[in-house]
Image 1 (cartoon, rainbow, N blue to C red):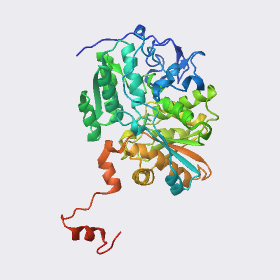
Image 2 (image 1 turned 120 degrees about the vertical axis):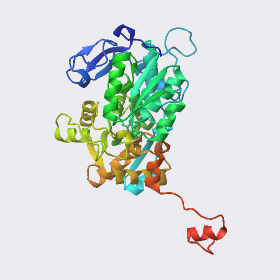
Image 3 (image 1 turned 90 degrees about the vertical axis):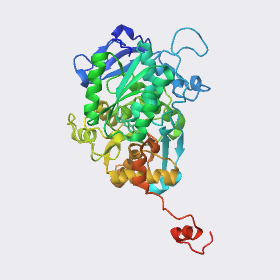
Image 4 (image 1 turned 90 degrees about the horizontal axis):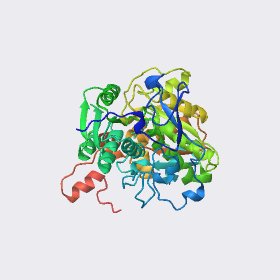
Length: 430
Ligand SMILES: *Cc1c(COP(=O)(O)O)cnc(C)c1O
């Protein structure tokens, strides 16, 4: 296996003005550090672009409908299409520009004025994480790496494995014991080396971190690698562009480590700064009752206390969130709120998303909708508000939970009477 140690000089990202520590504010030249050398892993770096990094509505019109349309505000140097000059060519996969549905029946059911659902389960490996992995593999190539690694509750892993396959990089993936089988199947299918750690996500994360330090692999862990939030922010850029004047009052996002919600906020703020978003929505951060460390830190206004990781929503089963500071800051800046939902509410939301909007979501992805329901009941949201629920992963990734939510089929003998008997419609014509 090719192993190479990376130095700061390997990274050259010209559009980027500086990297700024979210904890102490110290700034670094692009490529000079992964995390703040004063603050360690608490010191996640935020990418800041120079004043020339911008696009207009006219620039965007006519560009391909994927996340590369925002290239001026992405941390990688893309080659001009068709040119043989410098820059990187992204893998030919449709990532980003996922559909936003006007979910009228779901809105009616919840008693809301208007509700949109953005289905990020439609990405190449069926989760939101593809936005980050698309950037990760190019940033890795830009840094001269040949091997990428990450620790993941499942989706970041299957996503990285897919994008590594499309880019010709080797992938080494650390997953916790409880990762659902379909996600692990994606990993091995994409050809990754998969290490299933006999412990929880937090221990798995620590081990991957150590291994990247030891073996010099390119680290895709979103809380550590400053460039990945830049991929995640494209969902915020898209929401502003896709909804325009209709930009909702609230955007609901499920929260595990906190990178997703922080990224979406960064995208919204950048669109607003460019004059491409009429206003800024409030963020509703949604956690599971059994894994609520970020929501608790937000409520107390204090530093994070590591908590439990017990929820059906494996993708947000995080006891020690790594990007909590940015998540809390994003929700606070937006004038938003956090809510926590029970596993029952999550399973209920999965059913309603499927039955009222035909969107099949994994538990963590339906948690955003469950959060909207909870926020309405608690009076955090008014029925007159409009909202968008981010659906971050496809339901086929965790069929066990889907069957738990929806029940199984009725087994019958291959006889006509059995049909009538099972449906309780003997003699009745539809
Ligand atoms: C990773 C993930 C989240 C949460 O993202 P964080 O950055 O960990 O907060 C939510 N839903 C799904 C489906 C995910 O895979």
